[in-house]
Image 1 (cartoon, rainbow over the protein chains, first blue to last red):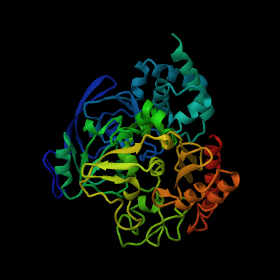
Image 2: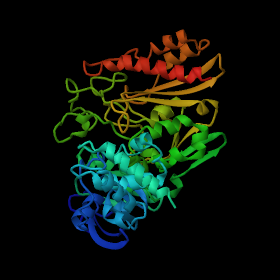
Image 3: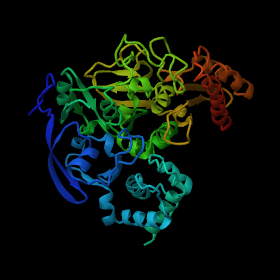
Image 4: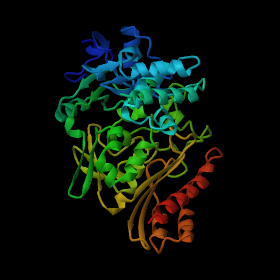
Amino acid sequence: MSSAGIPFVPVGAEADMDLHLRVNGREADIRVESRETLLDVLRERLHLFGTKKGCDHGQCGACTVLVDDRRVLSCLTLAVQAQDRAVTTVEGMAGHPVGRLVQAAFVAEDGLQCGYCTPGQIVSATACILEGTATSDDAIREAMSGNLCRCGAYPNIVAAIRSAAAGALRP
Amino acid sequence: MNRLAYLRAASLAEAKRALAAPGSMILAGGTTVVDLAKLDALKPDILVDIGALAALDGVDVAQGRLRIGALARMADVARNAEVRRLAPGIVQSLELAASAQIRNMATIGGNILQRTRCAYFRDARTYAACNRRAPGSGCAAAGGVTHGHAILGISDACMATYPGDLAVMLAALDAVVHTDLRDLPLLDLFAEAGSGTETVLAPDEIVTAVSVAADAAAARSSYLKVRDRRSYEFASVSVALAVGGTGDRPQVRVAVGGVATKPWRLPSVEAVLGAGSPTRERIAAAAALAAEGARTTPDNAFKTRLLTRSLERALLLALEAS
């Protein structure tokens, strides 16, 4: 193990690690630096560029992905923390029973302008519907407050989520 | 972020051994540590991930106390039926904090131990002077932009606000912090601002849980948060109340957030409230004492009036509901 520059490394601690993830249903095995974020690994190592780097500090939500079906910020997750877990990115939404409804609703309701925040919005909205928190416009705004849209497409984003949530409830 | 080594500890003992190494730091949810490491405000050489220690997760009620594991996630605690029944103020303080994504990640232990949002502390590459990052180096916030800074508990060394919500609620509930070494009152956990240390915890001490009495005051706990935008924002002022006693002679414990360098109790306010029936006049007189001893800048002077008014509102809501 290369741990150059680190003065004293306890047994078992590693600066480079073998990482196994299941990303959008496919196995991924790569070697990563322990300090790499899940966001950087998804984009730079696995070339899944759908997940966006906005602020890189947990303030904008553009990097939202599902880890074991919970929405999290991939910029504040070290990739090694997701060892052996299931990661779902916006690229996996077309094959996701609720995600595909959300994508279609964002298109139908014009829930975007520049589109940079949209992958995070769609993944976050999918989780929001599954959590059962998309019960009213106010509840959607609160549950989605971690996803910023600097174009200000919020009214159409809320409309898209309301519409997708109604569709997800239909048998 | 500097190059670092990572260990996923399989046991408390393994975590303790690794934490004995210089430059090591606990990693739980990561929402504070990963953020600050990217900014070089923290420079861990070794991150000891305690996320696999299942014994530190979960909520239980025993011997009249509600105990929340240090690794329980904010979202899971806020949804927990026992917490909702026994301490609604804890639920409010969690639901009004951060975003859904962060609440899915951040742990209760990490939430309590979160670092200040002072921009001069966070921006380590621009501002060398910070008595929190480098004791004795000075305070870049002095004379700077201080809209969010504290007005209580400050000194020339540091005026950075304690940013959390949960710990303010826990302060009103007289919570106990449990570590692998001892139990201590939450109010004794935090060191003086700018003293060069954040808490009284030893470098390898691990918070295992936090607990509160599951009593009538916890059942009548509440958390009011006032902020610059309606959601996903730190408090400008927050008020945590735990109301015990009787309807015409309530015993109210009061803690405030957003205004102080650590979770802040207001004993003089509590004394006035405890001296008689909760009339509007008594509530106003008590609230007027909230900002006693405040030291303000032109940027944050608004907080004194916002504090007294927010406290008065929270008290009226809590005591008129009785």
